[in-house]
Image 1 (tube, rainbow, N blue to C red):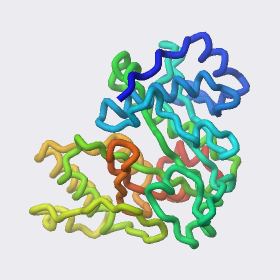
Image 2: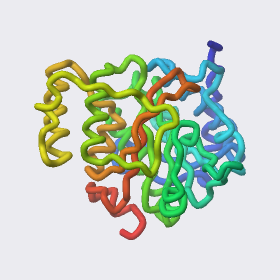
Image 3: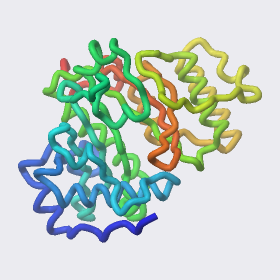
Length: 303
């Protein structure tokens, strides 16, 4: 495993995070969101790659390289953008997301979309035709360790919140109707907890529009039939959270954020990512029309 690169100079970051790349101020936490790519902000991209690698290594994943950057980051012709959450008070990048608007997606010789998720999942013809042109793919979400160490617990919550607010602004005028995201479970995450989460989503929202290439094997958990026994997702999720508290498990913050947005998902199963420390990636599709949080809905297409 290689040591990560040295931090990019703050002066360079501030010069590239400018009025041309500015997207929005966040409603809470005092953050700013920028949308950049490898052409207009190469220094920011290097810092994003450095912070990603540190964040993912700290949780048991990562690439093992000096920066977590791949062809989707480094080839602007593939259409990917970086959403960057900037903390102007500390003058650091607090977090980020990579985003692709599906109508800009290119395809390989086999007709599969050229995007990170294609390494993990196979996309059906129905998905490619009916959903992909209207779907924003989200990947590589992170909150930086430097921000987590220097900020209060309240601002930590606002960081994830601010990133999603940035996503809403980014898609507002694009014609997108869905976002496709992955929730990453690291090797340190309790397998029983992951199995129970998988059973919850399988019960209420399983879909074969997209399927894993290498599916994570899910096993029964003793006593779960008495927990996931309710009619609605909301009731089962509430029961699951109570059981997790008893067992000392936790819901990953990014998954909790998605569930707080909507209770209507299409669940595509969980894939083993053999290029990223064998982490488990759970695929979810959310329709903007199903998002229940009013302040986000006001920013989305069709509002």
